[in-house]
Length: 112
Length: 112
Image 1 (cartoon, rainbow over the protein chains, first blue to last red):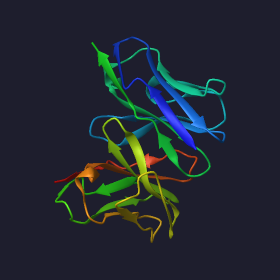
Image 2 (image 1 turned 45 degrees about the horizontal axis):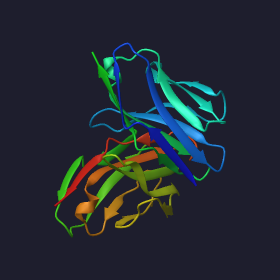
Image 3 (image 1 turned 180 degrees about the horizontal axis):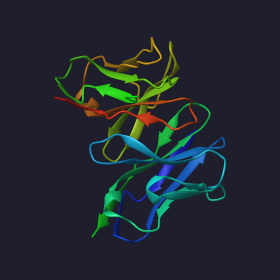
Image 4 (image 1 turned 90 degrees about the vertical axis):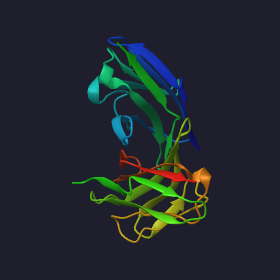
């Protein structure tokens, strides 16, 4: 069985501040981990993915995430928030059984 | 490539009506899935398919039916709509279960 916990359903930051969105996972097999972003009234777009290569993964729009097996975490960061980063972010875990399990999402607000 | 397409974009049904949500992809992906998205719940897997003629249940399959007669199409059928099925429905596809899933734009369904 696999599961994802996203800590904080709503995160608010100032423009230019560090963005940190937290994700912890549970998986009985080596996990594949993903971060998706959803802008209002749109589908989900992949930000980045971890598939057992480098533990620090760089994605689009300046985001990156670090896989920490000992902490079962895959937190998403961006050094400097931009207004256009305001969206909902979803962490997801997958295994070899073709199923993705999503977290409940974190809504990121960026204040001017 | 159009990617993953979904029709309709919006639909209003009355309780007890049936309908089919259409999903098609032009990327020759073997794996396709249907999710529903509800506020505060993230995305929950309804049904998925690992190839033509092969389907399986996800986390919340009750009240929904699927079939996969071709690689390209994966329709979702609501047998007898209920207000609890009011949601946004997303179709997704991937080349394998461990690779990123590409999402359609979604169908917003309201059941009165």
